[in-house]
Image (cartoon, rainbow, N blue to C red; front, side, top):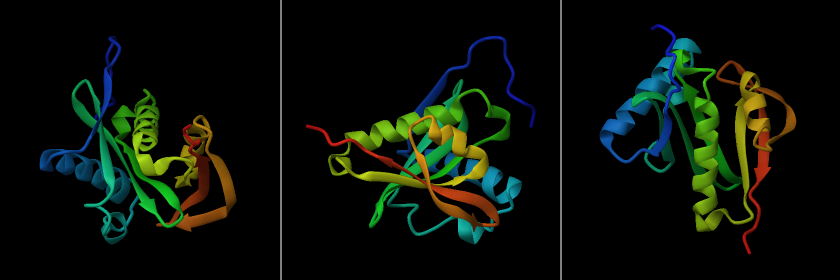
Length: 158
C-alpha cells in the first residue's frame, strides 16, 4: 500500500470499538502490523482478553488506520496492542491513540490512583515517554521483539 499523502491536514479520530464491524477493522490492522509485518504468531497475537478489553480504533479521514486496547489486571491497568498501519505512521495516529486511551482510563472510576503499564517495543518508547511513562526493569523479548515495561501513575482525583 502507498503512503497516505495529501496536501490537506488529515482528520484523525479515535473511537471506542462498539460493533462487530469495528472489531473486524481492528483485527485486520493487527493482522497486518503484528502478524504480517512483525511476524508475530497469530496464537500469540489473539488472546482470551479480546472480549473483555476496551478496544479503540483510529481513523484518518474516515479510513481505519490504527488500534489499541486497555484492560484491568492484578498489576494495574495494562495498555496493549497499539498498532498503526505503515502508510499512516508519522502523522500523529499513535499519539492520538495514547491520548484517547488515557482519557478513557481516567474516566473509569476504578482507575483512580491506579498504575498504568505497558510492554513497549523499543522503537515506540519515545511515544510513551511523551505521556510520562517511565521505563522499568530490564530489556526483555516478547514475540521475538525487544520490549521494556513502562509505567505511569494515574493521579488520584479529589
